Amino acid sequence: MAITAGSSLNSVPAAKPQTLESNYIDFNQDMGWAQQYLPDLMEKEAEVFGPRTISGFLSKVGAEEAMTSDQVIWSEQGRLHLSYKGHIQGATGGTASGGQIEIEVDIDGNDIGANHGIRVNDTIIVANSEGVVKCLVEAVDTGSMIDVLPYDFASLNTAGLTTTGGTQDTTILVYGSEFGKGVSYNNSANSAATDQRGANEPSFKTFSNKPIIMKDYYEVSGSDASRIGWVEITGEEGQSGYLWYLKAEADTRARFTDYLEMSMLESELNLADSQIDGNALVAGSTAGAGNVGTEGLFSAIEKRGNVTSGVTGVNAATDLAEFDAILAEFDKQGAIEENMLFVNRATSLAFDDMLASMNSYGAGGTSYGVFENDEDMALNLGFSGFRRGSYDFYKSDFRYLNDLATRGGINAAAGSNAIRGVIIPAGTSTVYDQQLGKNLKRPFLHVRYRASQTDDRRMKTWTTGSVGAATSALDAMQIHMLSERCLVTQGANNFMLMK
Image (tube, rainbow, N blue to C red; front, side, top):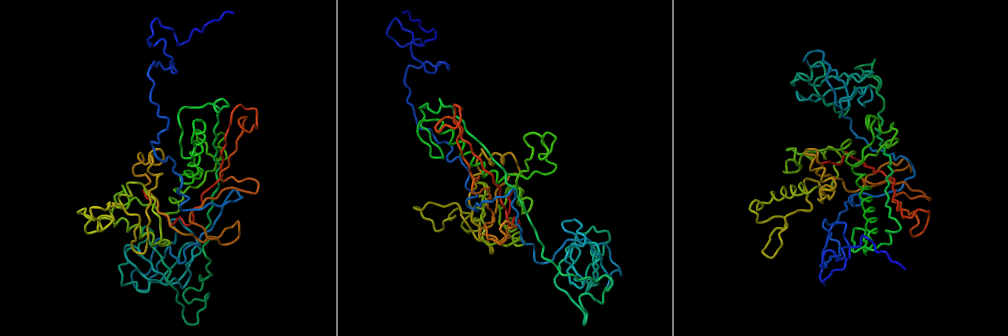
């Protein structure tokens, strides 16, 4: 029997008993390594980035709830009192007492027609930078015009109030009403022809959001699933051992879990002018077809909430005056007492410096954070919460805004558009749920996911292939992950996005 030796063996006998490149077995021959000395292998994989996941933010401030529809709709209370923006269109009677002022009422610069709640015989305050005057509403026209009679027209600087052309922004506030003796609602002595005082209805605001479907999967061949490695794996999902596919699958799962939270923060609704390769997403014929997006937290705050960039435009809350401006804005909104601050590192340190500057010893560095320090006490250079005015704030680092692999990297390139943090009201809000048909108390933030008795799509996982429990002829194992969810941001006017 003849034996034919292979031509590519890397173990060749030598004439003398010595270690040579030609007769040392090199397991990394393709890389050209010829090492006769056994290295000291450190099997344990080093965790050089610490915890790599960023999820957990929504679990701190919100809740999760199942739904069975393609859309979630909720309503929010409008403001109780009647206040509008407007423009002075003209005045009659000059500046003499009793001159009539004609005002165009609008909302955010848009003509609202007769869809306002100002009525004949209402008493109002009309104010702009030129002066403030209190008036009685004489007539409400069919459009957005109202005619008012000042109580003390001549005693004020009325240059702006009598300007014709509507160039001066004016605020109108209803503070009461006045009727003459024996005058009914619809029989005013001031303007019998145009006097129609109907009942005001509460404003009704509805908002909606749609869930998006997110998918991912991991695949390993049957051969690789049974191959042992020399690296002892480790990871956030608790995986251990020497099977590398376990690490790859767990990393895929951890990354997908982060995507679930990142999508709830970053997602945008598809607008009519959104373009991909010249086609709107909803009208596209490729990957974008039918994708309508969803409204994430940052988008909801920018559209319906408050945004601050601080006085300097670089970092919010670098001094007390800037933070007081934030409080003044909250006073205009719901004035919710307890709030959570989730900020990046730079803003967190700015808050600490701001609070430390309030201490008379802070400038000298002798007392900072933990007061009455001695040589045996660790010096605390940070603050976890504080109270200003009637508001309590609890500060926490937002890892998502710091991690260079996530928003931290985007912030480094975004300049003044970088997101420094968010201020979120704590507690719950009362809203009317149209699906259930009743008022409910829910956290201001909560995630809605699709679920029914037959399919729970909160975080759905299933395995296919021939590895393990065989389900197909594929010589591999595929692990699939899917979720369908959206974020409900209630009372966005009480939120603050810090840029």
